[in-house]
Length: 120
Ligand SMILES: [Zn+2]
Ligand SMILES: [Zn+2]
Image (cartoon, rainbow, N blue to C red; front, top):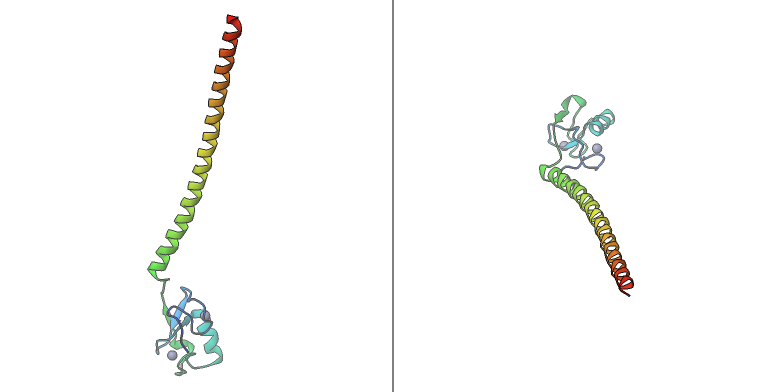
């Protein structure tokens, strides 16, 4: 049976950071391995005899690259949100600016009109 590196040999999910190995080198989640060895006294992969006292705790972490990538993706999402917020604020400011410009224009037109009326 083929499996990916970093996959639990019992539940086939991605290995948690609470995982372990046996003297034969096959890895599994700590919980899965202990549950398995409570029923069967062999390695779930190669069937070499094993018991709970053979379990070797592993201090594994998800691959660094994946962790970095995840952090970067999170940061990307965060930055995109910030950017969208800034865009929205810019649009609002543009609209306000337009409104002011229009008001100015109206005032100027009114003034011109009044000056024209007064000159009659
Ligand atoms: Zn598992
Ligand atoms: Zn094995």
